[in-house]
Image (cartoon, rainbow, N blue to C red; front, top):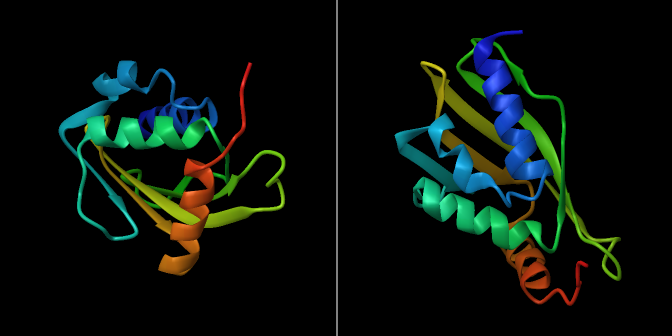
Length: 134
């Protein structure tokens, strides 16, 4: 297993699977020029990325597929975002790519498979979720 793959797996686990609550402390794993793009939208910096992940993670669960790479720089995986009860039947799917150079993450691209309207409807459900975590 390459060092770049280890970085990507650790980062993905902490940010996407463990609810991004400690994502700020992972800033040493990302480039100062880090960019995050959602559905080919405008690039965002790491701070904006963390805020987005933290707001999403409180009302949803991300299930990542296997992370793979053909060149040890471009890593990709499929993912599924699931909502808790009472909306557990709602989920969305997508594809993510992380670009790593010199052992640090430079870019994350997230692309949902849904149409823009379907994606926005799903985001609204997450924002309006009444789920309470104890």
